[in-house]
Each structure stands twice: as C-alpha cells, then as structure tokens.
Length: 179
Ligand code: IMP
Ligand code: MG
Image (tube, rainbow, N blue to C red; front, side, top):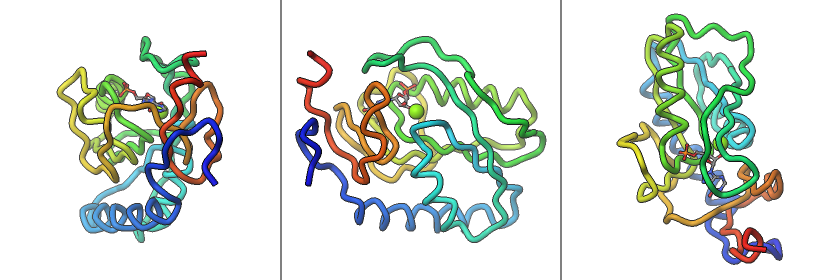
C-alpha cells in the first residue's frame, strides 16, 4: 500500500528491479577492459547502488562520497563534499552512481572533482533523470527512468531524511512540504 504522504506510485519494486538489471548489463558490456570504481553518492543512491553493482559481473571496486546540496527542502543549494572515503581515484574508470539528476549541479561538480583527482574516466548512472529540470547542459551516461519535474521519494530518495526506506518510488504529496 502507498504511504499516506505520497500521492502517486511512479515505479514499483518489481519495475525498478527489472530496469536495474538491464542497466547493469549495459554497464557490464561497456566496462569489460576497464578498472571500474563504482562511486556511490550517499545517502540517496545507496539502495540503487547495492542492487546495481550486484548485477555487474566484473571486478568492481566500491567507493562512497557524500555531497551536500539539498538542505532539508526541495531547493538546491551550494555544493560541498561532506564525506569522502580513503579511496584513490587515480587511473580508475569511475562510475558515479546517483539517485536522481535534477539541475545537474551535483554531477557537474563531482565530475570535475574526480578528474582533478586523477580519474582516468568519469561516467554517471542515475536511477531517475529529471531531464526538464536541468540548469546545466549535463547529460547522464546511463539512466534507468526519465521523469517529469516533480518531487519524488522512496528507494533511497528522501524528503527531510524521511521515506528513504520505501521500496518503491512515489510522488510526494505537495501538502507535505507546503505545510
Ligand atoms: P542536482 O544537483 O540539482 O542535480 O540535484 C541532485 C540532488 O538533489 C539529488 O542527488 C537528490 O539528492 C536531490 N533531489 C533532486 N530532486 C529530488 C527529488 O525529487 N526527491 C529527492 N531528492 C531530490
Ligand atoms: Mg543525492
């Protein structure tokens, strides 16, 4: 049953699982001869990341980074690295794993951050892509689903740190953030 704070189901657990496998297989075929480091953008991408990398049948190095941009709301703010593990990006083919791309600011920032630190290549995969919300010319390399410009939660995505553990992706009722 849909959470009471959600107005509409976008993708069920089953739909997500099916699409994640397809995208993982595409990535697998394109990283055969590479040194793949899958970099999880915390916290939102954590569920997608765990599901995705388990379907990439290649040696995959794991890495984690946390960026702060959204502060307890639905508006984007200034971008900073809040946490980075001890991972070296030097000469690695880094695949950034994101929950959602909105303005594109986070990934534009992250891409140059990784290239400055010696990454050999940087590509991005996102669960959700809000294509019409872009404020940059950023394009993702792999996306599971393109969505309309609306605020969504679940499967890792939050509103004020809530709803991350919903197993599906749903549109949050605007009444929740307009209160
Ligand atoms: P961007 O830098 O504007 O592309 O924003 C990317 C980040 O904003 C994502 O990693 C999310 O954390 C957050 N975000 C954007 N849209 C949504 C949404 O609809 N639900 C939850 N988080 C969102
Ligand atoms: Mg995020």
